[in-house]
Length: 103
Image (cartoon, rainbow, N blue to C red):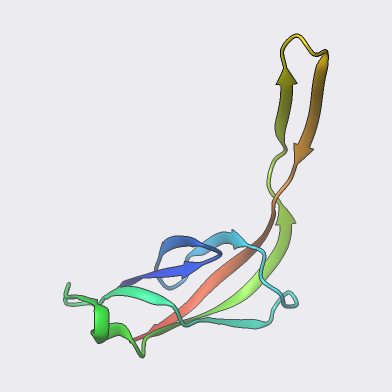
């Protein structure tokens, strides 16, 4: 059984027991989170449910931790103007463990 959820502007294919890293979600470590924006659900018999069939579906998960991704370097440059600028960026993320899929 798996579901496709949307959070932080991205889509994730999740199944119970899976650990994923998503955009930062407010909450303490160990607290429960519920994803209501479920796009598709595949049940144990292999049937794929989409659209109005999954409007009441939700995915329950728990927050495992918070952290940051690796550093990405951004280099700005304008030729003939002696303009150079280097900055770094680390995106905040939350590690989430999927507990169950309710469809």
